[in-house]
Figure 1: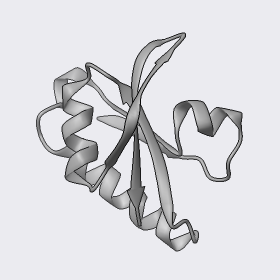
Figure 2: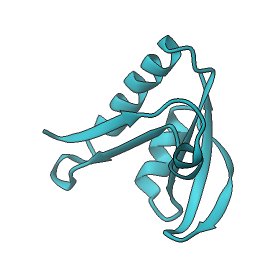
Figure 3: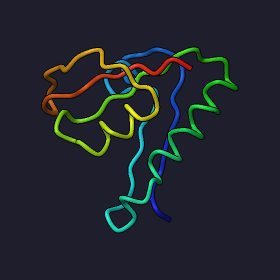
Figure 4: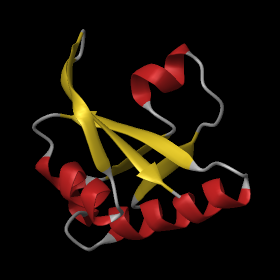
Length: 94
């Protein structure tokens, strides 16, 4: 297994804090385009479920996730200080 991705739908406190989509790629499988591919597929699934936009949150200094999210059309809402450190919040219109 190279990583995982999850889609959470609806709006609740958890989604507001961590986003509709969460993903991770194990270090030995990074830099192969897997995150971009997986995010694209999960966006297709979100569209099928009727979502018109999704929130994705990542650590402010996670440059790989920033590139992945922006490559899939993410628009930065802002950077927020959280108990987990500064987090970038992106919306992707589907």
